[in-house]
Length: 88
Image 1 (cartoon, rainbow, N blue to C red):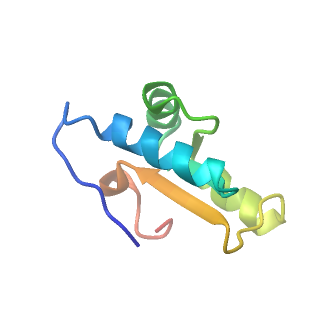
Image 2 (cartoon, helix red, strand yellow):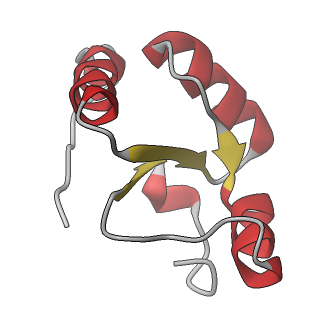
Image 3 (cartoon, rainbow, N blue to C red):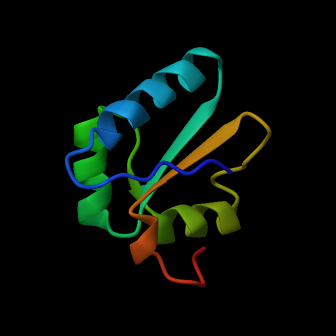
């Protein structure tokens, strides 16, 4: 587990975009999540990522088998502080 922490305007989205590009080019499956749909969509736009989902929908897709995590899966969770204990 790696954590990127920074204040508003600290270019976290740029850093996440770079991390996503590196992992994707190496064949990893990226899962970009946020605690709320609006945050997920904003993060997807800011970091120029292909995905961007609310954690509740993503967890439901894992439980139903639509998403299967493996060693080549990378999960990015934006605004982790607003995610409930149950979802964590």
